[in-house]
Image (cartoon, rainbow, N blue to C red; front, side, top):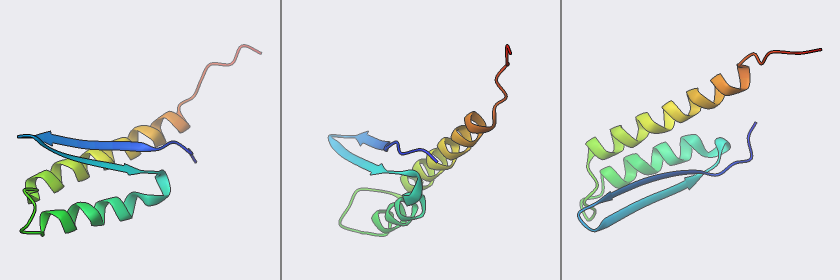
Length: 75
């Protein structure tokens, strides 16, 4: 398990949405993306939520791949 902080950002038309989360908070950030998309006060669309959600899942997969990657041993 990584202790790193993940950064997810969307910058568009002068608006900035920045999400900071760790590996234990993936479900919370996905829920927050959906909440933002459903908020009519925000210019954050369901497309934005879907795109960023996919990026979260891609980052999770990359991390798992890095953890399970076999490194050559020289001993």
